[in-house]
Image 1 (cartoon, helix red, strand yellow):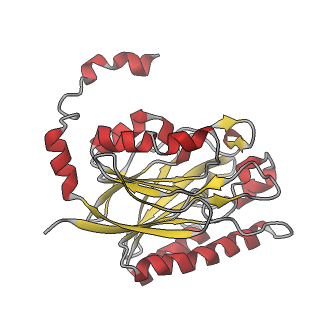
Image 2 (cartoon, rainbow, N blue to C red):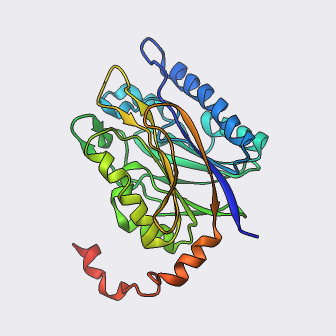
Length: 289
């Protein structure tokens, strides 16, 4: 019997934010996603991943301290607690990206990982933080992650998380593979332009180099009032051979679901012995530069 794991990715546009309080924005986005999570569960998904900063707009398009009040504890914050109830009710594992407050003034771009029984399994903090004009002012909001590259054992699959800009850095992608990840989820918020060419290039390369599945998510639409560009969706699943299995549309909310045959990982790694043939004894200069 093949070791199949059905997974879903949810890409969605932001709700209109003009005139709403931060709490109203957060609640509206959560309510919007609850329906999509239900659709994924009804389709038989065992793991569901939400997009980067799923419970709000991509507020990094501006530099305003008001968004610091969008932070919450992970675990223990209201979004994580609510999603634990959702995971338990649907008996699905959830990857939940939110704006985390460790303490006042220490904020992270974080994804909580929840088991199908609603248990909090841990979190990943985005490691590489961009600060790019125009409209990606992330160093204003996030401290670089400091938890390394954890892998979470769901019992039926071992998963890792890499968030958006992280995907440009092969070192963490390799670390996730060496740590035992079978599926790496990459929740993102990226707009059309130079990024779009790399979207289908870098992550299939990570899948091949490390012999695991990639699940890449991007939000959709143009978010007012910032209008920094079109979030082009195109979420996809990629197998360990670098083949895109299925891909979502560019311009609409969508629940993308696929069956991932984890037995393929062993088959690929027996052919391409990249982990065996590594030379870590020759790589010191990479971390001393």
